[in-house]
Structure formats: C-alpha cells, structure tokens
Image 1 (cartoon, helix red, strand yellow):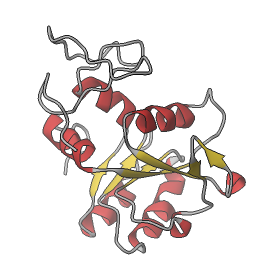
Image 2 (cartoon, helix red, strand yellow):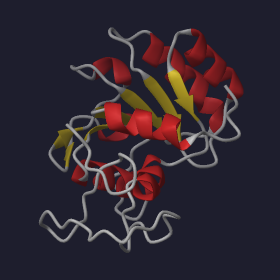
Image 3 (cartoon, one colour):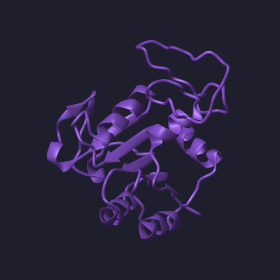
Amino acid sequence: MNHDSYPDTYIRGILNTVKTVAMVGFSPNAVRPSYFVFKYLTERGFKVIPINPGHAGKEFLGQTCYASLAEVPEPIDMVDIFRAPQFVTPVVEEALKLTPKPRVIWMQLTIRNDEAAALAEAAGLKVVMDRCPKIEYGRLSSEISWMGINSRTLSNKRAQNLGGGFQRMGLGEAGEKKND
C-alpha cells in the first residue's frame, strides 16, 4: 500500500470497525498529545487501553494502564503508537504475537517506519502512518467544534449534542450516523 496518502474510505473503514485501541506510549500528562487523543477517543466511544511501563497498574479515565501489549487481558483491534520510529518495529513484533492479532497498526503524526509497516502488512494487518486518529475522526465525522475546527468537511446539518458539551457524530458519509 502507498503510505504517502490514504483514501478517506480506508481511514473511515478502520475507524468505523475498531472498538478497542491499545495506545503504546501513553502519557498521563494532560498536555501531552497522547493524553489528549486518549481522552478524545474515549469520549467518542472507543475503549482506549493505555500502555506505559512507568504507569502500569494505575487507572486513567477508568482504564487500567499496562506495561506491554502482552499484558492486556482482552483482544485489541488497533495499536496506536506514540513512540519514535526506531521503537516501532518491536511494538509491531509484540502485536503480531497476540492472539488474536490486532487488525490495525496506527503510527501517530511524524511517525513512519516502512519496515514495521511491511511486517504488519505481511501478517494481514492494515497500517496507517503519520496520521492521528483524533484528527481523522474529527475530519471524517464533520465534527466542527474547537476540537475539530479544521476538518475540511462542512455540512449544513445541525450538529448533534449528545450531552456533556461534546459533539459525537458518526463516520459515515457526511451527515450519516455511525452504526454500532
């Protein structure tokens, strides 16, 4: 696959089907990007499991933090990696040992490792590099708010407020609701 650009249907397909995300490189510091993405995806209905050996056993937004992917006691749909490119291959190798295997390896903004991507794809996993699921979710859901203002997708449909002050819109074509 060409990892220089992704069709919206590819990204939308991933975000519409994953439910459980393991976030490798999670930080409990509220001003770090990994914490913000963790909180955002959790508020959108994803189960996000923090992975950070320095905080293993602690809880964040109701989720227990684990030291490694191997310690997570449930199936993982997607591994979201907040680690430098040189540390991605070992994360992918660990993910490939899980039973069942995750369906997606997602590398955050500025993170690209073509060797790790090829390894994951050879095992049948989908791969996204140098993208943020928070940004892609906001863009594809037509979410227009302070957290998704630059979504490049505008709609004349009224935003749905489902409580708590956050807009939770689906990832179907603009204006369609996400089916659970």
